[in-house]
Length: 387
Image (cartoon, rainbow, N blue to C red; front, side):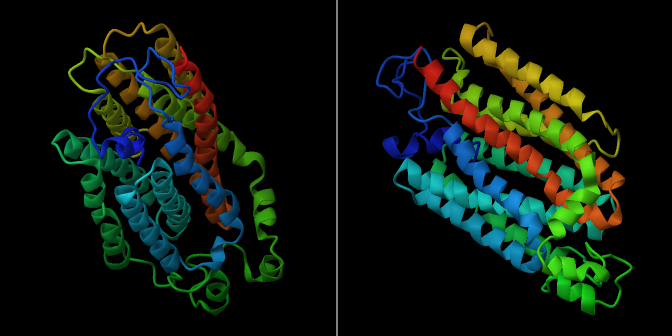
């Protein structure tokens, strides 16, 4: 969806055409001239639609999601993913497209929270697989979208092709994944903790003696106090990393247009997103080779990237899109490394009773950073398009 952001914002007025505007000088939101090839609405609109529902889910779900069996959660993820592709493909206005992006956000937010919690039922090694899988998903989505549209397929038909993704999700989850015998696929955690036979092999989030507190709805506060400040030293730097990189991706990259380059504006934007995802894949797959605990250093480097590209948008001193491609690839490496190392060390340093809640709650960090970046990207886009 983020790779398609540039097309989503232009397709209704041009019947899904991805051709660039005839002139490198476009109309801004006020109807005046701009030295940038601006869309009427910033790609940050797509970013906010893509992240705010996810953020809402991640903030609220850890306090009640244990009441919803994992099997039902996956079915909701699949249904909303299918809805997102169909709504965006057949929309007639930008805001209907934004509604489709919201469906995608619900699917992604519920999916990430659920599958991170799911890792506690397996060996810690699955976190490396999770990192590679999410990185690979980003590359596959961005690369397929870029390649298919580059080959001449319309954005609408390209999104319809993507319907294979939720189908593959059903097959992989329900038919390929091998669960522990005691896994509560279709039962809520309270029922399983009382009736389950092998409670010691995979302990529930809270012991049976604490069931009364759970029924009172205070289990989230209990676990958070047990986690203490330990999560913050990982979550805050992770949020900063993602704030910087999505401010770049959805606030600045659409303004970094090189009219003399052989790719059109829309094509440049799509390949920016694709190369970012390649960097994410490489670094998220590196957990088996190298582990990096100083997440704050990654956040500092990502902020340097943000400042550099912000200045390059204003002063336009970068000579070619090739240099931006390299910077964006490096940006993805930093973001992917921050993500996978954050969850690895949270899993390693959190006690058994807090781990499931901690893994789900920590995922708020990246989403909060992305949401703030989207809010800031709006006025930034408006400012540059007024120049």
